[in-house]
Length: 69
Image 1: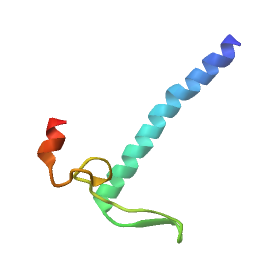
Image 2: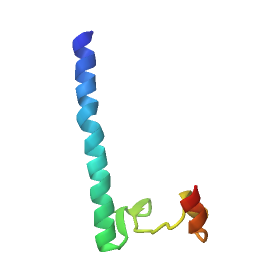
Image 3: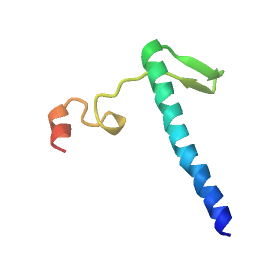
Image 4: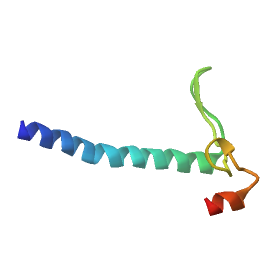
């Protein structure tokens, strides 16, 4: 059983950083291109959107409140 846990742990050790790297690359590419990319027609697309507030643009017009929080 010990070897199985070690294999599982090693899988997650490289899988976590890989997901973060892919996430950052897609954000960087979206920022540079700023165009919509249609992955699956009429179902799934990527588009660049800027959020100046917190989650779901909460407190968008009140940056000083976000700074205090």
